[in-house]
Length: 339
Ligand code: FAD
Ligand code: NAP
Image 1: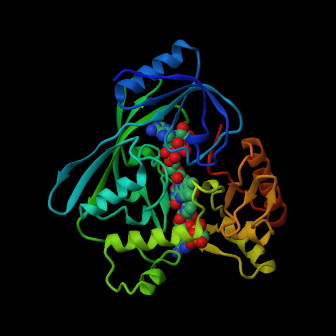
Image 2 (image 1 turned 120 degrees about the vertical axis):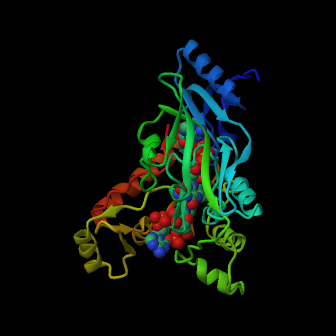
């Protein structure tokens, strides 16, 4: 297809915070050819290129003086199926949750715990999306990306992506790789992961004794709908801070003052703290300054009540970071990508 573009486009509909900034140029890309055309246009205009998917992990703090490329490619397919292990591939612009639902409808298990995460397939490897004890690295087999420095296509296997906790090679090298499609190895047999948060309890409440992947997905969707604000109603980018992983000794110092601290020991001896708990203890839950606020049910989620600017959201985030550092000696790292 031939690339269509516009100038001075509001990005409000393209970021789930609903921040109203303008892109100097904006074009959707439906296939590899349009991606290459956009890159070439950006170069000719002497502008950087910013790729976005669903805009659900972005905080836009100013007008974007760049060529904004919106991934709109579609397509999902089975690459191999040995009767048990099924390798599927999806184009980067495929919306994530409908893709998960499609795999479940085919009887493929593995992505059920990652239900109802907003965004696109192509952005999922960026921060190794995770929820309820599963990360995409658990079912990931590969992806194809365009090297923006050389223009060459490259296939990445699992080990090369350097996936970590909400982290990857791609997140650490912003702007280098443009992800075009991603492959997952799913299975016909369910290996249920129910020990996280209230999943098992929710299934029991629903009278489910032998859960299917679909039942797990539905339970997780129902928990998420209760707890998380729908970006269509209240602007947000999900968890605004990563859960900090700190030394065990530091947790003991916090526990001496706050015996109910929420902490999860990690395999390497360090301990993951629930950032939402720290923020709530510090009194920020439900806080609001102008239209920038902290969600009333989930302190880890910053919300835009309507007309907040990205700079106002960022200012609130920095005040929370400073307060948590002062009270607990813990540094909170922002999760969304800041532009
Ligand atoms: P965008 O926000 O559009 O982009 C994010 C980053 O990836 C940007 O830096 C962008 O430049 C880059 N990028 C996007 N597409 C590509 C591409 N094709 N190639 C290269 N770079 C690209 N995250 C979780 O991990 N777990 C959760 O449970 C979760 N729950 C959420 C709940 C809510 C209500 C919200 C609003 C967000 C949640 N998120 C969660 C965060 C977010 O949904 C995920 O990180 C998602 O993968 C972002 O996808 P996106 O398409 O919206 O990316
Ligand atoms: P929750 O169930 O209230 O739990 C609070 C925190 O404790 C979570 O952040 C989770 O860490 C951690 N946790 C809970 N049970 C755990 C266990 N058994 N072992 C280790 N850690 C445990 O969390 P929530 O806010 O409702 O979110 C539920 C899940 O969805 C979480 O996995 C969360 O990461 C994910 N989620 C992510 C986003 C995002 O934008 N990134 C937004 C909404 C929900 P982890 O976050 O490390 O899993």
